Every structure is written in structure tokens, then in C-alpha cells.
Image 1: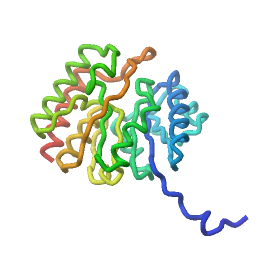
Image 2 (image 1 turned 120 degrees about the vertical axis):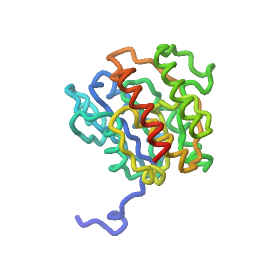
Image 3 (image 1 turned 90 degrees about the vertical axis):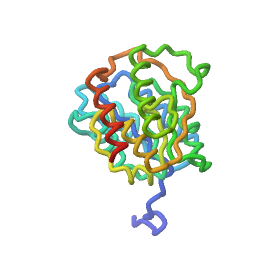
Length: 239
């Protein structure tokens, strides 16, 4: 049956949710399922994109079973995975969250609200913005590294940030397109944040819940990735 002109028009996508994944078969199915349910309740056109960063387990297959759009690639890094997702995304707004179950998809409307009400261009879901909001113990080395990156970011940009390394964010797609991102690894969070601040984008934080992973291991190397993050902060400021 031939499509009508109305049917053939591409539906405008309200939000694209991008979830980078590398070997998270235990948690990714639940994360994708809960994300879909949350977005369906919002009643807006959406797409859920899982970017598989060369997983050697069943992460991609499980995400597909939960009705996610899956982009598969070789193991290159979180930054490259997000950049692939950004290129594929069609939404007016873009949300990123992690696949390990540490973020609550149910809080997506919380961070999106500041964009839809035109109060911000870039929203960071902060684990530290409200100490009473989050009782989860985060390893000392993670806290110390995050504090260092926050301080360097504030020194360069003049903007106080409590959680520069949070992977739970909401950004206007139009802002992402102006950033010319180059990161391949975990430094992507800092690159995006600093470049947004340099463009004088309205960046705010909002408290989020955070659950420290209980299965699997973090892929972040505190020394190697920490050095890359510091370099990315300075390089993004100078670019």
C-alpha cells in the first residue's frame, strides 16, 4: 500500500537517548527497558540509541531485544561511541546515560525539564549537587579525581561545577553540532562541558540519584584516563 504524504513525512523526534555500552550484558537490558518505559510515559516522539563499543558479550543482542536502535563498532572508547550516537541522533534534545545501571532512567524528565522550559542549554545530572539527595558511597579516588577536574574547569571557565564527570546529561542537539568533538575515551565529558562553557551556553546542574555498580568492573583507569581528562579540559579551553 502506498504511503500518504502525511505518513511519508518524517516524525519530528523530541528526544534522542544515547547509551554507550561495552560488555554490560547483566545491566543493559534493564536500563534500556526502563528508559523505554520512561520515554513512553512522556508521550513525545523519541528514539533510544545504544552504541555498542565492540562488546564481546551479548550486550548488543540484549539491547536489540529491548527495542533499542543498536549501532555496533570496534572497541574504540566511550567518547567515540557517543560521537557516533550524536551523528545518528535526530532529536531536538539529546540525553546520555550509562549502561551499568548507576543512573535512573526515571529521572530523564527531571533533567530534560530545564531544556524544555528554556532555562538551560546543557544540563548535568550531578551526584554531588545535593549531599542529602545521594547517600551512595563513591570510592575516594573517584571523588578526589572528580574534585580535581571540577576545580581545573572552574579555574579556567569561572563556572562552579560539582560533577564534571557525570555521564547523565541532557543537551540541545543544536549545541552539540557546534562543538566539533574529538575525544575517544572518558575525557569526552570534560571536552563537551568546557566547549559548551566557552560558547557561553547556559549550563546548569541538577541533583540525580546514583547507584554504585554492584556487578562488573569500571573500565576507567584512574591514572591513564585521569591524565587524558586533564589534557582535554585544558585543550578544550584553548581551542
